[in-house]
Length: 294
Length: 177
Image 1: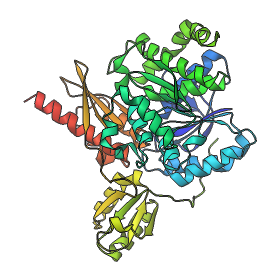
Image 2: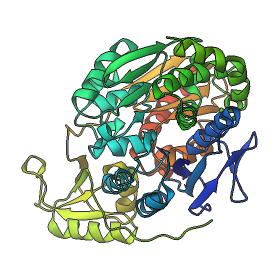
Image 3: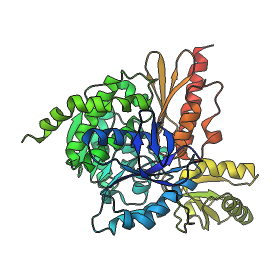
Image 4: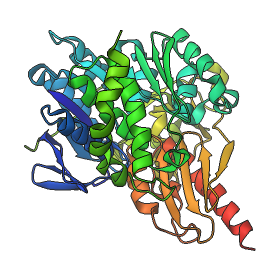
């Protein structure tokens, strides 16, 4: 099972679990239609689009309404702590949820007790919680943006709002240094996909690849373009693809989707996700052959 | 399938509320617990002792929501600070010009608005659960008519978005004087 967990910005959504699909505008789950907006809804939608192209089982999602109070987030932590042993996901993505270090530790311990520990992917505040709780090296993939790699590099910061100014002001040329610092501080997952004007694929502190084309600067302004990266990454890994190749394919696909959607700063994330099947249809085979031949 | 919720017991903070007096700390704990916010009475480390030696440990991420509760209930406190680090929030912002649009970045949050109309085009970045909610609230609204993110947000992400919002409003207002 490929399981994605996070919150959606509607307090009327109770904790729901099940297979999920994307109809081009909304997520469809448990007879509920959840708008495909920035956040976990965008991540799940991108995962559905990718899984659909790959022909693998649709992702399952554990979602709950939470507009910031943290009440819904706590339900996710609690549910996972108690039910991971029966769910036994192969890939587990943790996303928008209030960072609560103690509760994240319980979820991590539950995942670690499974006979086959799932591939653990964290982005957004789940990544903040994993870092703050000292669990980062036990995670398989983090997908930070430039401000978040600065946060991972700062041993004192418990949230990107408290990152040291000199780290926040680092430009893309400083990413390799920030990556080194994050691994030195044991604040990085085994693999990082640092998303930005140049994307960096990192494993165990070593930069394996960079992706800078096509260059679509407007993507940075569009809410959800980091979320789509985590969703695609999860689906590609769930299909059995080597995570290192999955990271490169994901970075290329996100950028190319921006090109296909003719992205501007006003583009909505659903417009990006809708073109993903076309992007994969046109490029997936060639990207794969590029990174699997020798 | 819909599931119920079992109350958790685990709590681990990261932030401290400092008070002038012990009774203020005790009152603060009661008010926050009544509002469903985790809080624990602790002794502040010597370096952070500013008044009485009783403080409240909270989840630092919930700083904005905690401040609002204490203010609404007229509870006095000195400051809310991280247990680790120098306690300084990021003040710096970065501005990116997209010709017809402007993107303002504060910390991990970015707000993009139409240079001419001042309408919010996009909100990106962040990771706390109030971000998608604030994104939906702000999208399509004029900066001059929208509510500030800190009025509705709960977390440090909303505080960073608030900084981007204020800077955006300033840039847009100055461009239309």
